[in-house]
Every structure is written in C-alpha cells, then in structure tokens.
Image: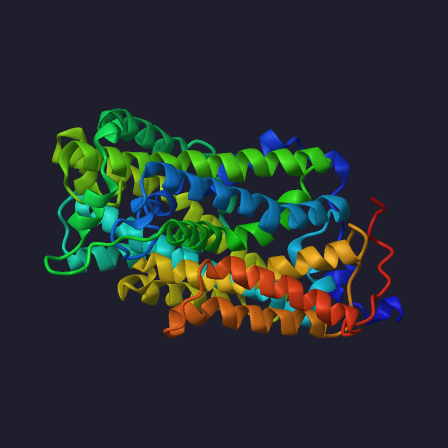
Length: 460
C-alpha cells in the first residue's frame, strides 16, 4: 500500500531523536518508582486488594514476599520490556507503535483511546482515597469526603489539561513523602515481625463460627500476581512512551529493574512488613498501613496518624494530574474534532461518579478491570515484536484482526472473576497469556493485515 494510506496521526509522527534522550536514572526509573510509591498501591499490598482473611500474609511473611518478588519480575519482563524496547527502537509513542498490533484504524481506539479512557478510572481511584485521607485528618463526615472528591478530581483534570508543566516540577519531590512515611512506620513495627503468627492473623480476620483457613501457598501467589500485575498493566503498555526517552537497551532494562521491580518490592514489601509487625506487636487485625487510624496506633498519636494521611494525599495529587494529562493527550489525538474541555470534562465527571459512589474504592475490582484490559494488549505486542524479528513491524492496514480477536478473548477471560462466579487465578497474567498465544496462532494463520511502508521510522 502507498504512504497515502496512512492517517495523519501516523504519517506525521516524528521519532524522538537520540539527542533528546537521557539515562534510565533521569527518566524511566524515578518516574516508575513514583507510581509505586503512590499510597493507594502499597496500602493495598497486605490485603492484595481483596477481602480474603489474612490477605497475602495468610501463609506467613516469607511467602508474601516471595509472591511480591515474582509479581514484580513478571511486571518487568513480561509487561514492560517489549513495550520499552519498541519505544526505544522507534522513538515513537504508544498510539503509533500500537498500530502494528491493531492496525492504523483499529489502533486509533486500541491502545490509544482505551489508555486515555482508563486514566479517568485511575483519577476516580485517586480522588476516592485522597478524599478519605483528607477528610479523616479533620474528622470530616461522608458529605465532606464527597465534596473533597469532587473538587480533587475537577482540579486535577483542569491542571492536567492546561498546566501539567507546573505540577511536574513539584512531582519530583513529593514522592519522597510516602517513602519517608514507609521508613518511619517500618522502623516502628519491625520489632513485632518476630512475633507474627499467620494462623492467628487469619483467625483474627474471621468471624466467630466461620472457617479460619486462609489462602493456600498458590492462592497467595495468585493474589499477589492479580494485585500487582493488575495495578501495573497500563503502565506496562506505557513503557513505549518511557522507552522513546531511553538511549539504548541497557537504559530500558535498568529503568525497569530499578523503577519497576525494585520499587515494587521496596514499597509493597515495606507495607507487608509493617502490617505483619503491627499485628505481631498488638494482635490487632489491620491490613491498610496508610489508614490514618493504623498510622496513629503505630505512632502512638492519633493526630500524627491524621497528619501522615494528609501528607500522603497531598503527595498523590501530581499522579492525579498526570492521569488527566495522559487522558487529555489521548483524547486530543483520537478525537481531534472534539473540544478537549468537553471530552476531558466528561471523563472527569465519570471519575467523580466513581469516587463519590465508592466504586473507585474497590481496589481489587479496579485492578481486575485494568489487568483484563491491558494484559492481552501487552501479550499481543510481545508476540508481534518477536514475530517481526525483535523490531517494530510497522503500521498495519485497517483493523488487524489478529490483535483485536486476541484482545477480545483475553479481556473476557481476564474480566470473568469480576462479573461471574468463575474463578481464574492470577487473571491479569492469564489474560496476558491468552492474548499472546492467540495473536501468535492468528498471525500464523494469516490474519495479520498488511504492513504499510513508513519511511519516517529510523533504523535501529
């Protein structure tokens, strides 16, 4: 096909030149680390974002940390590395690189528009948990919490649309707040880890007269993977955008190992140890280390706990703005004729509804949706990359059905645990595998659409 078959958003894309790129420790690693230092992530680590008695600590601290390490490595090697390499080798953003897997027409929606739409889900999650933390700092009730959630989401959406450059300057330092709080809480609870008893924890979480059996070893592994991978899935695909700022393969690799794998283990691992240590010392069942009441008990001062909660909320504001910024850029690209104030405004309204109704507070369900949506995308992109000889194949014509069918089936598999009684262990990982296997089979069956020549893409 001729170059004229390329839509403007592909043909006019300009690769990021090597001169504009920087080492991993200046961009990829600190940015990803900031994501994992978000208190909404590590606060859910002990429970795994689910209501299982004992959460990931059901089989003890060692098993919980093992599950975390495995999950962190899966995020790096399966969900991030190929997108990161694609970004580095092409210098092009995700919405262009994705046209190889989903076609130049299909890529308009996947992963471009989907990435933007799901950011408003993250904005809702951010607004829900931040409003809870802020309201609890001055003993505000349900009405105050909802008002704060509305204002939080609205302001973040506006700043993300118009003034992200100002937030970016502050965001460099604010992630230090949750890191310092984690260190303080860990120092206060470390002495209780030796007295931690997993069976006692499960029993404390179970109502009288009900079974006290916690998760099995493999149940803990599956819960850890579901939680961590589900949280990370969109950021994994966004590795393309991170990779286009990397100089070489070493920068891609180190950025992921330090910013994703190590940051996950440190932040979530600290939260798991804090929860275990607090229970070992007091025997009081509590699985959310970022809760102001939990922090107040650990610090011996309710006021200190509330102050810490307020600081964690403040530190979360830049991430709310960045979510809005990503969504705004996605909508500007995929909906160029729609006023961004309208498209982003509608998205912000959805975020507000998710926050004030409490739906956004169901972290496990949110992570399941994210994992189901982007698990098969990452899987298909990985196979597409290797089938092309470890490079970007280039934009494909129309709708690449190999990509779309693999995504649809993978999404259904990944979402089943949320919408039905079907139990699929580690559903986001299974969705990834389904997407990868199906893309391979469909590509070999000749269902990939033809590649359109794109001379603007530089050689590797």
